[in-house]
Image 1 (tube, one colour):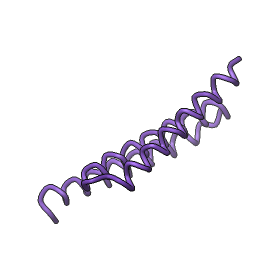
Image 2 (cartoon, rainbow, N blue to C red; image 1 turned 180 degrees about the horizontal axis):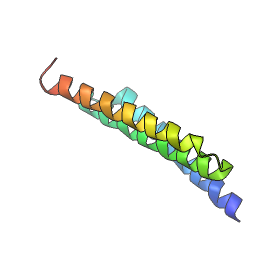
Image 3 (cartoon, one colour; image 1 turned 180 degrees about the vertical axis):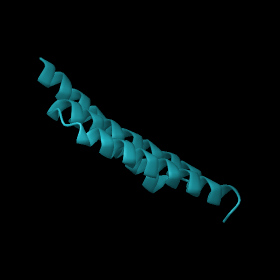
Image 4 (cartoon, rainbow, N blue to C red; image 1 turned 90 degrees about the vertical axis):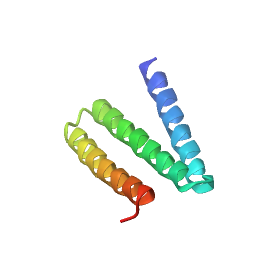
Length: 86
């Protein structure tokens, strides 16, 4: 039963990444594209944490933290560029 729930959660997360990717490609404004990219990174981080819990590997949590920090810095840089320019 637990495996079925994990598979459903994984399928939903992959569908969410696909929808965010479509929004990133079609987004009418640059801000929409940035928000979609941020959503994709958040979903990816949650999938990495899910994988860490499933495989019982602590190193994946560190990878998710580093990925989250790099994503945050990148999103802030893009937002600053869109707001004022560099």
